[in-house]
Length: 245
Picture 1 (cartoon, rainbow, N blue to C red):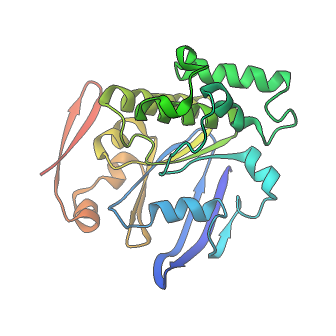
Picture 2: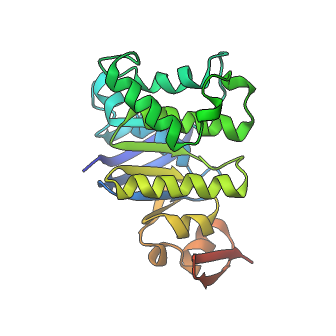
């Protein structure tokens, strides 16, 4: 098991955000965290990482910081690049938890592999702040890949990407799961979540409303309760398309 959450409850600014959430993630899963705005998806990820106080337990939050950094990489929703560093140096930051700290031979292998996997070789020496928003997002994903952890937690990783880059990002996450890693990503596009994720967790009003396969979670009654909408499902050769109506 890669991550276990048990009875997590969180209050932020005197407002209850999560209520007794329990969840377990296993190797090889690409888990899509879905739910309306304000459902607590970002808070759940931050709590799992030990970034905000809570009641209940997270197996990840109880690890010493160095061990945690080798176990989980985090792509937050806010992805500003604060310093004028090159793409290569930005990706190298992902190696800080490891013995070489970004300068060893194994570090170089991991950095080069992450840059190649994200198609960033032409931008390697370019200042990351001068990239487009989508290119910056790819560079930050590469940093997370270079960290080489069993678990990747990504908060709205396809927000702001064009359709081609959205597909490329989710294909990558599916590939990582096929390689044995675990990915937890919040996704607003229900159709893309249904197409790429091996499992969905529906969060609403701070509770896990449903957890399981695409068919088990994207039910009319559950979506109506969570989002106040009905959907039309169209099965295509490339996977299901989910259309809000």
